Image (tube, rainbow, N blue to C red):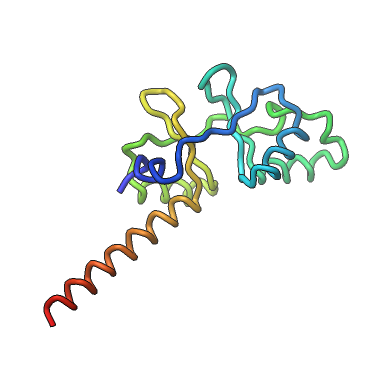
Length: 144
């Protein structure tokens, strides 16, 4: 099971902003779309960073009430760890765990094709375990 299988289920919708997008606009987008992060792109599919809920909280702690003066470039995490569609779900989960982050952009031959979250990875693993359990139950029932 790999990242491509997750994208087949969840789709490849990407919510992105530009580096100059005001932070308060990003906060509104994250809240209204019920997502945990937006990708920061400088041009079509040119990934330069990510702004997550955690980045917003860090900015709030550092700036307090001065958030309306900040833009994506001021709070984003640059040098984003990415995966490819061929990356295994186990490897993706390990990257997230090791890096203490919950989102991974997906690049295919350098082109941005999606984003997965820790929730997506956990759901895929649970679905696989349920499928395996159902297969075992069917096998056992057919032998009885």
